[in-house]
Amino acid sequence: MPKTFAITPVKSRLTLDANGEARVTFNVSNTSEQALRARVTPVALQSAQRSWLSVEGDSERSFSADQTHQFTVRIAVPPGTAAGDFSLRLDCAATHNPDELFTEGPVVAFERPVVEPKEPFPWWVVVAAAVLLLVVGTAVWWFVLRDDLVTVPNLFGKTVPQAQEELSQANLSAAEQVIDRFTQSRDELPPGAAFPPAPGTVVGSRPAAGEKTAAGSRVELEVEVQSVQVPNLKGLSTDQGISRIQSAGLTLGQFEFRASTNEEKAKIVAQEPEAPGRVPAGGAVDLWVGSGPRVAGPFVITQVLSTADLQRLQQFKHREAVRRLLEPENPDNQ
Image (cartoon, rainbow, N blue to C red; front, top):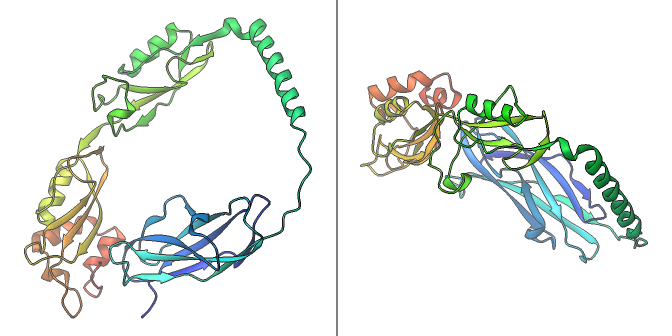
């Protein structure tokens, strides 16, 4: 069975540093002819422990056909572990079918060398220097800067012009460019604040409200972007679902088929984000459409989708994942 992924480490052997740490980068390529979402997993070998290994960043990503992602695995061996040789590998599997669409990567060896004991560091020098720096810094602040510090006002809920005026009155100024922010939960807001915040209003600042900063400093304003509620699309046809997405001010993201019952065939069976969540206006919604039970022979999209569904998908044929689905020679994208 051909491999679904090609996994290539940048190095095949590593030596851990004095802290018992190292990093190794893997190039992972989707060698199949379909777009996939896949997850990588580091596997401990040769007396190594799984707890020593972690993937930096997202371990689960979307791959288009022939696309390559880089993943970095961090090795952190706890203090007291005896010197020796160990090894690991990186496996990759499609999230929707990990039992069939998976690949085991090549083995990477790593060595924990014998660490010679070091003489104790003279921490008293650091302590003395820190105390001296604190004394000098406090003196400078007291005699020079004390009278030039102002408090950043609370600008939450104000429009940008209102915030600019209040900053001016506090002997501060607003930065020319605002920072767009999308508030996803009440926990990000002050107690009692309405959720979601009104679009175009200030929801934070840098420095934050209540902090001290030099008079005349610029303050960056974080402003809430326009957001919309994600509609419930499950059970709808592709034509109906995309129409409702566009009516909500959103766009189609990933589009894939998933094995389903006959009753779910040609209907949307899953979506991401789920309803009734909120996303920034213009955001993307991923759809999974039921293809019916698995049958022998090649997958034919016209046997699942109606003419109206196919016409609606044509709007997005510039996207590789959709274009490949619309080509009759391509297999089911599952």
